[in-house]
Length: 121
Image 1 (cartoon, rainbow, N blue to C red):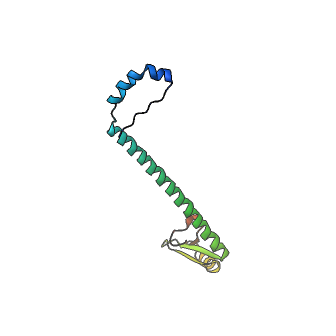
Image 2: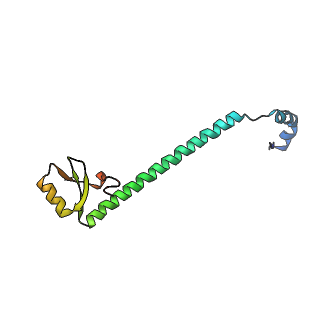
Image 3: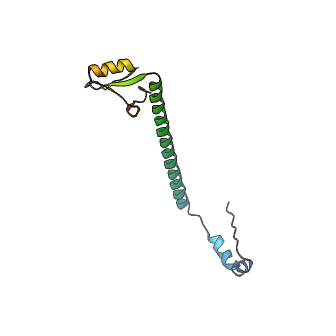
């Protein structure tokens, strides 16, 4: 169903009534163009949504990482990495210090920015 509505100053509408009457019956919608425009807008919306979700994911990850770092600090714990295997472990500050002092080239403490999701937090 198509509804034609035209607004304008009364004197112009009266003068152009015959022109308008000729235009409207010959009007046809270009469905391919409309679909292309709609699809483009849908793709833009999807891209914006994905960008927003990625940003929220990054904020959440950063918050979780910093929370784990603060929790470790309050519990007197340290995340230690074995540089030979790449393995991470959370242990007491005392044990972490002993491991690092005994073999500093093999064991290192890990800052929250180096925490691995699912392992360190």
